Image (cartoon, rainbow, N blue to C red; front, side, top):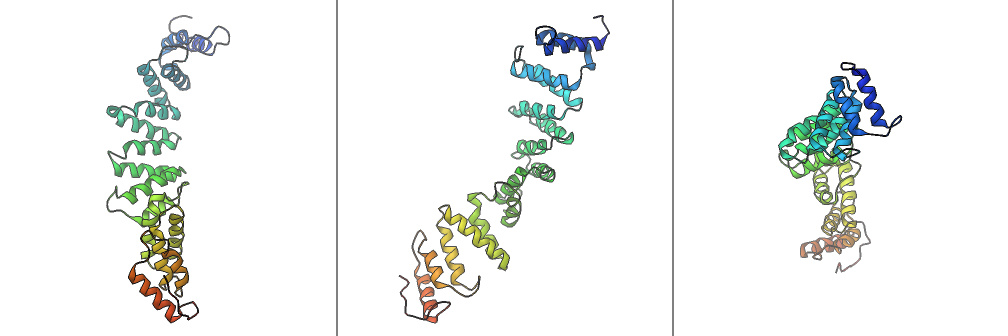
Length: 273
């Protein structure tokens, strides 16, 4: 090797890094790569970053690893942005650089970078995080839909919006979380439209199956009313019986009237208790 022969330096670095012709020696490889300067391939820089971050054949050197990742990202290696962002994300002082690295990774083809940047920004800049989640969702990262659903459910972006939250949860692989089933069902039922009422019933049933007995009262009220079609006091009573505090007096009166009037049942005297 002669000074200035950068290609030779890279090749010697590769020989020592790969350990094919000589015993593997990461430290020696690193010295040759340093002589090669800016001509070291970006993918090689990525590997050097991994070696320094994880202590593979050399001592752990986080600062050196980060610099290798920065150079690899600058050379267009998308995954270097993910690794740089991940390495920096534990440091609050480096949050902006970490988010930028994730975004650059996404721009280079690692769409998950939008999701990771959003997660990093959500507490500090919720609107910016939502925009990043939208980009991730557009790129096919379904997990972003769950985050957006949570943001609209919790009112992070303003007034809680159950219907909008539901529209995002429907696109998430995890679906609607347990805590959101009852409130979203209430929002759907309040619209009074047949299709939305049917969806509300499904969510109430799921909530009840998961142990939320308040959902039973909602189902009972729907079946007792004519919201789902003819009143069905017998089915309503089955749900009302599952309420945590039993059947309220006014509901007993409504059930009694429904049985008396023969609403969708045989008109016989029936004691709902």
